[in-house]
Image (cartoon, rainbow, N blue to C red; front, side, top):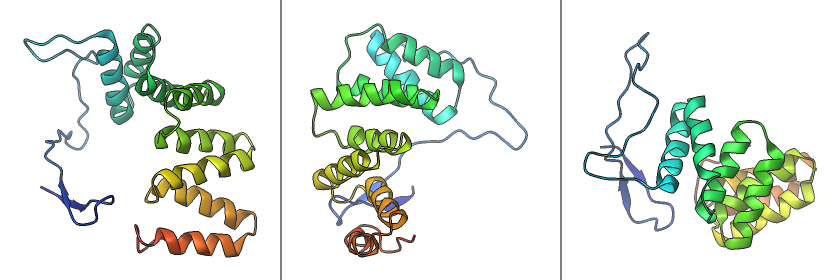
Length: 182
């Protein structure tokens, strides 16, 4: 099994025990796109919606993405559901809907690093660079090893000509990713 360094602890090893099914060259997966609970188990609408969202993220299957959003819109959303709805909306090119979902996450869980990073990307894409910067800084305060927030903030500093801040940030990020580049 492949082993990877665990960022939070720095002393552990994470082993990926998943068994991946890969198609042979030129072969396409011809299975049904619908998900089914394991035999003997049932799934709630929420669980099934989250499962469709997770699978569609990997597969890129539009039917699964649409089914995930359809199912998740029917449940009372919690932070995890809002995170997924934001991601689903972002992937269907609805940045306003995605931002609204991630803002809803932060109302329920102000410490959600995922929502901070993603909402920062949405704000940055919309031209609100100050808002994006504030969100990415908050994400790094919550998790100093959050490399996506760090890289985004680093690029923002570089693009704005804030070289000293960019270099100071890159030095901090090297603790977590020694080979970080521009």
